[in-house]
Length: 416
Image (cartoon, rainbow, N blue to C red; front, side, top):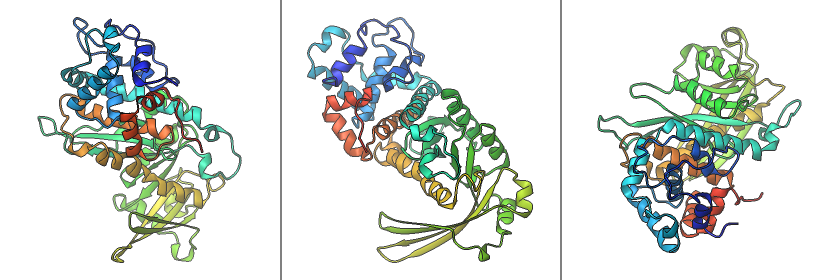
């Protein structure tokens, strides 16, 4: 284990006094090694700090709970003060606040997302041998590579024209690590951008989608989307609501009142009790003809009750999935549906609260999307290391350079 973040950076950036690109990108190596694949948008003349160094320091600052340009600069200045010998190697001193702002506003966010999501996918493949083994017959939930796609808008990061940063991301259900992210253009919706997201994941980690399962909300329940997902050899689990009235009616044609509840999942969390009852059968009638890829159809009823005042609520929706009955039973599908909202709890909610994203005023150039990418990187880094208590882990990283270095090197992992 390296003794500190300073030692890590000194060893990695031995020629950092030169404005040169360092190393080749290594998707299977530590997180910061993939940054070498990102093109430096600055003019070569006058560069004092290599792009890879600036981005590594920005990631470290984000990991240590410092989000603004000013906080990044102050954090790096503290690093310099902790090690007087640092200045002998980095003769230009720490990157300034303006350097952080200029770099994060100019770099190509697609390149950053491609590099980081490729690294995450490679780590998941390397660290989850159980997801790659061949299992005959009905599988358990843990035997599947299951990921969820959902969009998020950074409401306060408005550009000068009044636009907002809106991104569509995919996250691994079991770990919460972010597999990929693409930008959604203004005055558009997420539906056509799922194609870009799947292509990005497939290009970053060829073959990853084959045999995996993608869960999406009702917005993405489209015939073309189902065909697209299956074209990658990927299975899907889709929720059906009123935005697809014909499909909803076809699902409702099944004699659900005569079908017993097949699986129940109960949760108590944040002062609310939730009970999810799922019925699952093979499709018949018009649905079987209209959706030939749907091998099972379900009716999901959610009951919720606020324990504080006893207020209850219920909702019934339908589900279609390409998973065959001989591959995934009702308990597996129900668990996938429950964990679909993990991207909301493990990623979006944490970014809103822990990273203060909806109040962050970073807006110049591509900086708003880059900030979202940095947050995804930090979350993925912690999730892959096995840390569920994100806020506590980030506070520790801010005060413990050795812990920080271990995370960036991938040498720290929670066992069990």
